[in-house]
Length: 201
Ligand SMILES: Nc1ncnc2c1ncn2[C@@H]1O[C@H](COP(=O)(O)OP(=O)(O)OP(=O)(O)O)[C@@H](O)[C@H]1O
Ligand SMILES: [Mg+2]
Image (cartoon, rainbow, N blue to C red; front, side):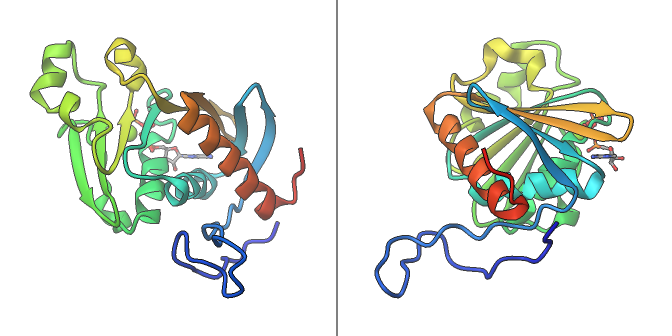
């Protein structure tokens, strides 16, 4: 697989010949394979940790202010690692991205603010209110929620669900849209993955 980085351009910069916006630069996706895409969802297989992080980087590259990513998966599935990739694409230092298992929410400053929640240790919606979940989720910046499935009734209506399953030889990562913004985002992810893998659908 081609692992070279694309030339970096500013988002929405016009082509010199006025041919319209230049697509966002697509990060390399080493170890990422598109398994299938159907009914608006996309399923990838990540062969190693670097692949999970790279897929996160792609999501971060394509994300916009207001986006919400709901991460679902067992302990150690790769939710925090994928968040590292996502946040690094938004200019956050990778080392700054740490698990919010105990802090419950971390905020990182990048090109967009990234709010990183972990709901694993919370028991009730009251506690969500205490940590500012309702003010922060979906506000300006990008919101990432680990263990979002523990509070499905408290989530905003529209979000991208990222479900990570542990397999013996890697991780299966499924993208499921809730709302038109995320249907479009998955199409962008697929277009970008095509350009990196040669996969056609
Ligand atoms: N595709 C992959 N193949 C093999 N190992 C992987 C892959 N992706 C991630 N890992 C490994 O899985 C672990 C993921 O840890 P991480 O802290 O990101 O999980 P998590 O889902 O956030 O867990 P928690 O629920 O405890 O917060 C790391 O050890 C990482 O190296
Ligand atoms: Mg985690």
